[in-house]
Length: 162
Image (cartoon, rainbow, N blue to C red; front, side, top):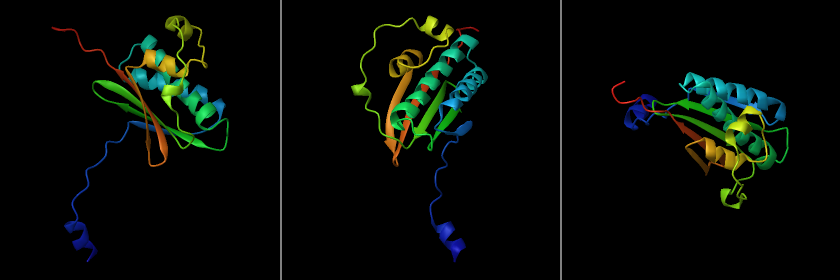
């Protein structure tokens, strides 16, 4: 009878699986690992080292926001990083179960010298603004009581005739 039930039910569409999923404790000592993995995944996705560093900085800022704002410094929680290397873009989702962010309430930040910020390996203080400058798309949604910050960086198209 169970076989009949399985056959009778319509097959579910399979969800696309990310290339890499990390589940990390909500502790700041893991932010270095976040940066290293984000840098490496961006490089494996075809980004040059400078662009990969920028992607890593954006992912670090998003993770820092989860720790400081969604979890308010609580160290007994977890968050997830999902890396998806698609043909046209690299997508990174940060998933947490903390307080929801309203990006409209984030104050506007004056212009920042992005190259200098990255080269000095600075972090913090400019999270949402910096992520928006580095990434092609930054979106927020709440799904099944979880916050998802989706960061997307498009890959450069090959030059015509190349």
